[in-house]
Length: 151
Image (cartoon, rainbow, N blue to C red; front, top):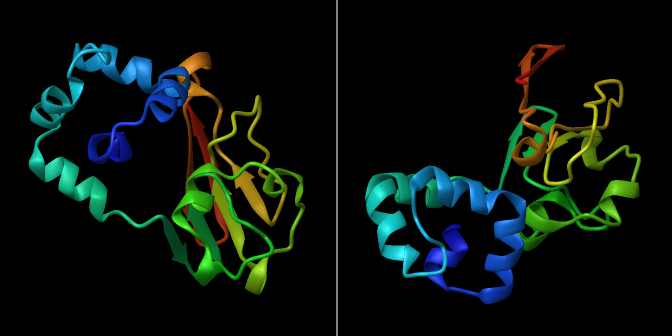
């Protein structure tokens, strides 16, 4: 959405609408086909949009790396592009780890039926909430984890 607010792109809009964007617009009561940018900006507010823009594409806390989609395992963590962190699927999804400096990667972007906590190298939390109604979150405290799910 933030990219679309900056630079409208038909292909990106189509992709987003099929992966949760439609529900976003329905929640706001906005028609995505007719001048939605000003209305969404007004409804979200300048402070929220600025806050969203200020968020990092990756966040590392100790040996945990949080990203949206994944990483390119051939590229050092500090050289990952925003495009990769937001959109990668393969070869990331086929990589078993371990990853650079023993990092465990927490990600989403590619829906799965069941969250697997037993892989010490990565955890995918995307349970396809826009289609399944199941939203997953992970509470991490020290070396302990607890999975929470709606639906």
